[in-house]
Length: 107
Length: 116
Image (cartoon, rainbow over all chains, first blue to last red; front, side):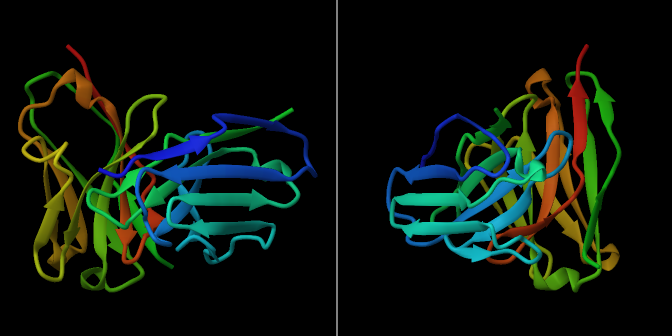
């Protein structure tokens, strides 16, 4: 099973700052990497798919990059609604797996 | 509008059986897979398995194989997740999600509590 390791576990930032979240895979997942946002009591929401494609309705301040084993989710300027948990997810190999999550919290 | 509406919260005792549902609307049910994802209290997301209603095909994460049964009834555009004998460790929120390349639309989640 492919293990996804996210860092940092928690990111403490202020609104308007740039957020950079990392996801590393234990083996290559090509670009079959997605990012999800989850707020308390809500289901996950797809943000980025196939490493760099924004999902429908996702603001342009969200961007994804990477391939192989190293991926980045960037939020260029944090809005109040962006403070949440973020999970990466790979669909390259079965079973599909998720990272353990990065919490973006207000500093 | 694509919607996945899951059945309501459940409280069960260890050893009991349970079947929860996920009703889809707003798209052709047989054109997409439906995935089930577990989230234990305060924990991350775990991929349980996936079913393709169009061909009655189901694949399980080995970690969940034999522990649950995933199925779908295309006549009512509904997917199911079933347990024959619940354990306390099954306490979690269970999400269904529409899946083609990736899970894109998610149900609201069903909280299952198993306690004696």
